[in-house]
Structure formats: C-alpha cells, structure tokens
Amino acid sequence: MRGPFSLTYPLYLCNMRRIAFAVLALSLSLGASAQLYHGWWQGNLVRPDGQNIVFNFLVRDSAGKTVLYVRNASERLLVDDIRFAGDSVHIRMPFFEAGFRLQLQPDGRLTGQFVRRLAQGELVQPFFAVPRTTERFFLSNGPATVQAQGRYAVRFIGRNGATLDTAVGEFFQDGNHVTGTFLTPSGDDRYLEGVVTGDSLKVSTFDGNHSFVFAAAIDGNHALHGRVYSNIAPSGTWEGVWNPQAGLPDEASHLLNKDSSVLHFRFPDLDSSLVSIGDARFRGKVVVIQIMGSWCPNCMDETAFLAPWYKANRHRGVEIIGLAYERSTDFARSKRGVETFKNRFHATYPMLITGVTVGDPDKAAKTLPQLDAINAFPSTLFLDKHGRVRRITAGFEGPGTGEHYAEFQKDFNDYIDSLLAEKD
Image (cartoon, rainbow, N blue to C red):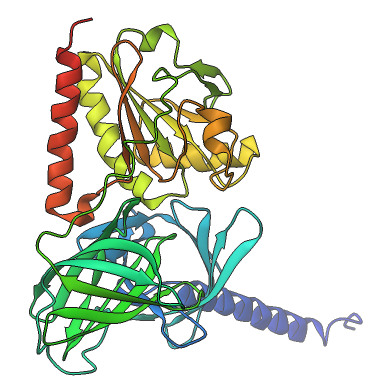
C-alpha cells in the first residue's frame, strides 16, 4: 500500500523541476538582457523642445568588465563604474556627482534618466541611447555647401538683445565633419563635435557637466546666426563673425588686492590635516595655487596637465596646491568629490577643502582676502620664492582649443622658468 503522498510526489517533483528550470531560464534571460551592445551608441539627453543634447559613446570589454568611453571630438572619457541588476543599468560618471539610471529595452535601446546632483536637489533629464550608431547628427540638409572653418568673434545674446557674454569660436572642418570649441574669459567649452549639413552648423558636447548643442546658419558673409541648447534650460541666441584676430580680454590681472601680494591661508587636506601656505615644504619655492572644484570640467583639463607636470618638475623647487570650492559646505561630501577627482588624475600635490561653496558671493573674502574676487574656475596664482603673488590667470584653455593649448603650455613653462631663475 502506498503512502498518502505516493500519487502526488512525482507530480510535485515534476513541478519543482519546471519551476527551477523557469527560474534558471529567467535569470539567464535577465543576465542576457543586461549585456550592452559592444560598439558605438548615440546618446540623447531629451529636451522639452525636442532639441536633444546628442553625443556618442563606445561600449567595450576591459579585462572582463564592461566600460564605456564618451566621445567628444578627439577626447575619450573613460566611464568604468557600470552596474547591472536585471534589465537595469546604472552608470556613474567619473566626476560631477552625475550618472544614468537606465533600463535595457528588448530592442536593445537604453531608456531612463540622467541625474546630476546640484548644491540643492538634483537635475533630472530624460535620456535614451541607440546602439550601432556612430553618427552624432545626420546630414538632414545634405552635404555641406559652406565652410565653417576658422576663428570667430562670438557673442551670446539675451532676450532684450543685450550681450550676455563674449567668446572666441574656433572650428575645424573636414568635409561634413566639424570639431571646435568656444573660448571665454572664464575657460572653454572643451571638445565640440558635429557636422555642417547644407548651410547649417550643428555641434555638441557632453562630459557629465557640460551638455550643449550649438546650432547656426552660415550666411554668405561667413557669419553665424543660431541657438544654443543646454540640459533642460531655455534656449539662447548666439552669433559669430569670422575674424582671424579675435581674442579675449585679460580679466584676471586686476584681481589682486593692492594692500597685499602675500597669501595667508590654512585649510584641511583630504585626511583632515591642516595645510598652510606658510608650511616648511613651501618656503623658498615657487608655488602654483590652483583655484578649482571637482564639479568643474575646465579644472579637469587643468589637472590633467598639472598632475604629470608636477611629478616631472617638483624636484626643481616647485610646489602646487589645489584649493577646492565645492557645491556643499559638508566636508564628507566635498572630500568624496575631490578625492575621486584627485585619484582619477593621479595627482600627488595636495588638494585642500576650503569649506566655502563655489556659489558663495563672498568666497574670496572668506578664503583669500588678498584677492578682490574669484570669478573663474579654474583660476591660477603664481607665487615667487618669497611667497608674493606675481601673476593670476583666469580660466583654462584646454586641449580642445588646439593651438591655444600649445601656447598655454609654452607660456606656463616659460613663466615658471623665469620665477625659478630669480635669486632667492
């Protein structure tokens, strides 16, 4: 005689096997769905007016780990913090407290949100990405019929027609493909990339903080008239006039308070140890003060230059100190941002947390009262062997500016050489 479970037990085992198989199949399916296409993608930050911020990125395998590279002209920005959970994909940008919360769709697209933490709250913007797409912009008006190549005197225009800001535009064209940047007194817009289609220019950039599209018509006089789009903000107007001699004013030379040219400060480093400009390691040396923030793309470019330069030149009697003005006065939050920033560039010079935010209108008075103002990030101060401020520069002309960057490097090295050559 069989027991009470003798008839149902085989059915029970069969059902359990089916359930186990279904769970295994589901897990394999989810695992497969979270495998991103390895190759080129087109990313779109979605704007309410339909003028999306478009950029490209490359997904690939690196030692068994999925990474991606954001492409802006010649730059490839490595993003190596990518996490998968089922069909969810979380991408953390290396800087700027920014990232993506995404889902992988059955057709292979990614959809979701771009999120960047602000001083208060978050910027949240819809996002989607399409695989197997190398194009940034399509040639909607056909091949280029005009040339955008050249240097332009540019102004950005307010609603009332007044000039909000001036810049120098630099564009380089190869067929339909265009790269370039805008230089302003406070820095540059880094690497722009796009197309000329018909008589229209369209270029964009995205690095986690900067997110722009510049669109313009090019008229018969080689002038540009167009719109600028950024994250979810209202669009603006800009125009450019071709001018090979276009330049920018020096807005930093007057920032030093005439009452004193010697700095006095003491701030904590990333280990909470106080560091003073009067410490023994800085005495009798040429010192470069980098006024920066981990939220600042141009500071990223400057640090990419300064970090290896310092390693190669420290033995000559030169020191560098970074003074960080973050989005928050919270030391722990500021430390996380600056530490990630510092480690990414393998910087070995100290970066100090000022505890004063970038948005504080009194940041100069609270931290460096010898300066009348801090108007640009980065700003760079050059101190001689006696601790006197001999020169101040505002902004940074990074590698996206072409010959301007080469000129900066020569000028930087020549000026440091001149300070080192002075008698003690």
